[in-house]
Amino acid sequence: MILTGWQKSTYSDGGDGNDCVELAATPATLHLRESDAPGAVLITTRAPLAGFLHAIHTGTLGIVASVTA
Image (cartoon, rainbow, N blue to C red; front, side, top):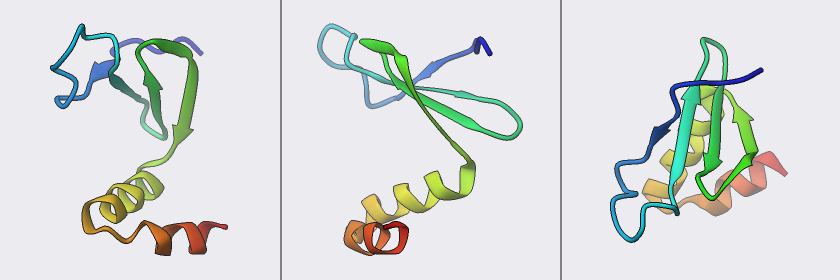
């Protein structure tokens, strides 16, 4: 599957613009990649990614790691 419409993170403004997180979405999945390694894509769904981002925001990453291990 070839995805189009990759979007850069708003946090990727600094530097030379090559070290960015990019996201593309389908109705069922989210695809994440680093702009300098576009061949490596992490595929997930909205719920696990939302939980991960919430854990980062609240500082509870250890809880997420213990639940998903």
